[in-house]
Amino acid sequence: MSAAWCVIPAAGRGLRFGGELPKQHLEVAGKSVLAHTLDALLSHPRITGAMIALAPGDTRWPPGFDSMHGKPVRVCAGGVSRAASVANALAALPAEVVADAPVLVHDAARPNLAFSDLDALFAALDAHPAGAILAAPVRDTLKRADAAGDILSTEPRESLWRAFTPQAFPRAELSRALAAAAAAGIEATDESMAMTRAGVRVRLVEGREDNFKITTPADLAHFAYLVSQR
Ligand SMILES: Nc1ccn([C@@H]2O[C@H](COP(=O)(O)OP(=O)(O)OP(=O)(O)O)[C@@H](O)[C@H]2O)c(=O)n1
Ligand SMILES: C[C@](O)(CO)[C@H](O)COP(=O)(O)O
Image (tube, rainbow, N blue to C red; front, side):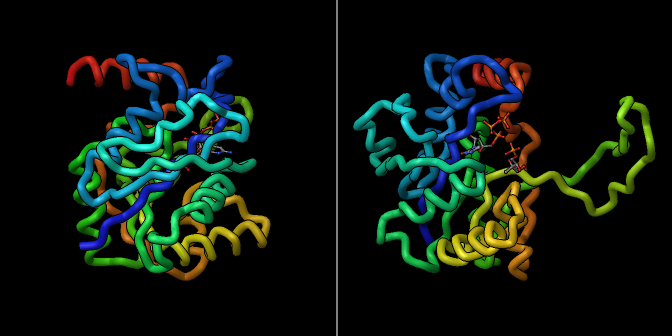
């Protein structure tokens, strides 16, 4: 039963959210979104450390805040894209995270991660070490729109899933796949895109729908409500 470090891309500017402060630093119930996310990850016994990719010069993560739940928390410089931030964080991991060690990549902007989802992801990884991600099957009818915002077509939704995070892969293989995608000029919007491009079979693990990404102010209000009901 392998343990894993997590990598947390937290270097985004939150342009779709708006406002001065990037959304990962906004507070809910006295804690930043990033701290909620870190708490959800490091409270799981199989996660042994965290590497946070912050925008260069972003000192909002309290300097010297180097542990949570008795586990190490490290910070590195993010990159110009989410994929670059993840690649930087993988390269910054300590030597104890050996090449074939699993690493979980989880968006700082997904603070409502459930312990049960982490259990399910680790169970899948134990059975399929090549890689696994949390996701949910598409259950709504999908429409393609024209420039005016009118329906162009209805798209088939059979076998379509929405990818969430964490996404878990062996450290070295993930680094290589991200580098290969970047070298091909492909911006991998998630880790599984790079890994499947590299020929790896990635296991989908059905996760909770409330593991949503905070992208807009309405998402933050939704998360704040959920926290108030805990
Ligand atoms: N250069 C980047 C861009 C994004 N992220 C992180 O990747 C996660 C998911 O990205 P997204 O929700 O798109 O965040 P932003 O890029 O900040 O949002 P926007 O696209 O609205 O600017 C976030 O935790 C974000 O901080 C990152 O680490 N480095
Ligand atoms: C990684 C991700 O959260 C999976 O759905 C998503 O691809 C991030 O996209 P974003 O545009 O960087 O928020």
